Image (cartoon, rainbow, N blue to C red):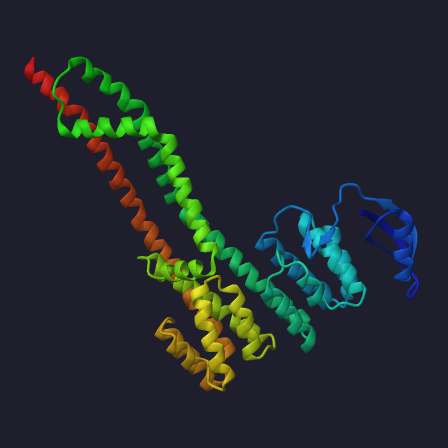
Length: 406
């Protein structure tokens, strides 16, 4: 299916318009335009554009759509709708300035389905790799309540916040990760290249070597001889782990284990709390009731163990209980979060209180990561210092022994 750029005259207003349309050929493109009450004056095939071919709801166009790209697109749609532009025209305008092939392909399909009478939420739902359940359900709530523009602005805010937080985390972790990789590379280089050359000197002397030097030589010879086996063992362990967590029971156990890891477990729980609170608060602000909002939250937590606990929470809410008490009974969520949700329920402002909870935990996560990174840097330096000290001592001891014998 090709993409055609067109110029046409609108039947209803008589004004000139332009845009893009996908069709098998120019004749089909003209027919589609006439069905939209547009009379084409010029049609040109755009060979640089890429379109969509949906197979079971999945786009075959490759490429990556970042959170920042999706946030920008969402805000642009909100601005165009606020200016009074109909949805199909807004999508057409968006297609002209979208440079990401995969997002452009999805928008072509969404535009055609909306033009054919589908709701925007239903059209977005056919592209789950790009538009999450949170995105689709918030759009659906906005369409039902007639506040789609407001909902899209909130969605853009959420996506921009997620992109900003991710960028901050990556920039914070980049330096210690680089240091760790550099340290490992230096150690491997010393053990596989430098140490074997130095040990040749000791072997020629045929002198009795200290235990420390023997351990160093043995380790170096083992790595040099069996490095392929070491890589295969590591790769095999990784594949076994992937196979284990691909099973439902294995994934639940692993997700529960993650919450018990030192430092990381507490950090992971804070991230889950922040995502839970922000998503639920935004869904409630957009007009969804509690149970449908909890259903959406359940799909985005990415932790099977917590999702199982959330099923019990949904059961309690379905029976008419407030949200705070079932959350407390799980024994997982922090008391501060429970108290703030309870206060929000009693004051009738649970939506705003949930957003405040999310802001609190997002800031707590940032501070925790800063502290962990600040701790990682001296640990890496100390480990490197210990290894270099071990290496120097293992080399110097036999040299000093040989000098004494001379």
